[in-house]
Length: 243
Image (cartoon, rainbow, N blue to C red; front, side, top):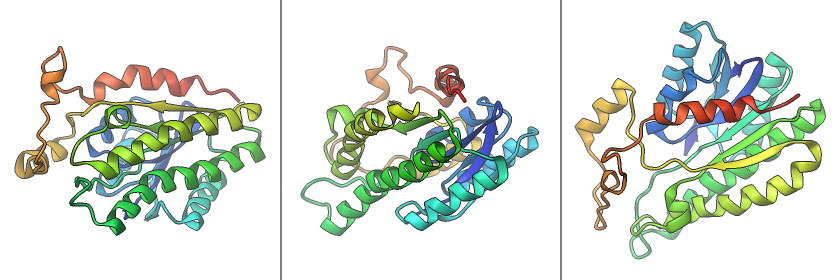
């Protein structure tokens, strides 16, 4: 499973993001500041292009989030370019919607390796860099409502995201002495705003499932949230990082 990290600076803070959720990729990025750093597929390149067009600084790096050497290389490039990494967002995921009776073991292990292993590898690489540069940074792990309640027919994703809950808590307690905050952020099912993503969603629809869920019907708004609904709180959260 390949992910493409890209990078930029946010209000003089350097953000390293390992994206994966296409619905919340591009829109919230542009409101978070002037520059930055990230990682995922074609969405990432478009996001980086938009940041640069808006006057920011960004770059994309291809690689595998489950490869420790790749994580070290990405962090090194960010530090060489900007001097430090202030924020890490772990959002790498492999959407492989299968259940207990239909999921091959090797696919289950790979899905957990992308979600949990990728978060472990990048958190470790960034934490070591933050400690070395004396950066009181912030690490944010993107969770899911499936992390808290499970989801039928989606066992690998639900298990991986649930594992991130206590990974976040454990890492937070361990890194507190270095003034590095580790938090989880739980978005719901999200409707993208990017025109290209909306076009692809309209063409391909949602993955077929034996357990259809009415996500929009669970919201009092009677619609799914969009990336813009997350922007204000996400921006404030990132700006709370301190040197």
